[in-house]
Length: 187
Image (cartoon, rainbow, N blue to C red; front, top):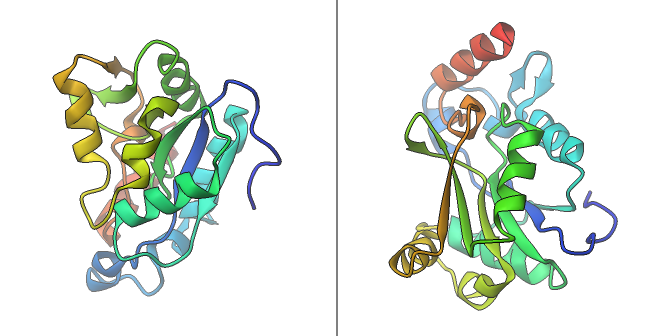
């Protein structure tokens, strides 16, 4: 289900769909959060549609991993020819394709690019190819926070103020799904 081939000089979007989604079922969800219906389509399908519309190469990481760090490392290993990576959790169904392209473009000048929505950090977080070894070493639940902090320390992080609520609208609970449904209806 991956995009055919990396496109020269474009980072690859890593769609992370490896989590167990336990908070969603604990909140009353009857299915995995990525399969929960949002406007009659599964959450993950919305995320993948935005990724496909961006025109960027992508990789869907669905194998079971102990934590987000392990998932990121596995996805980076699976895309060795990538010019960089945009880490996008699969539970962000409202993220826009133009946001993905903006983060990708910022990697031409910075090692890390992070979208901000009204001052709040969101996803996808972009990483230039220079971050490869650090990403491959990730383990556990922390994701890539240590990689980001290391690049912040050397002023190599771009913060992109974007008007995309989808960068911070993840689906962790049934209430989150209802909020996303209302935001989608308002578009």
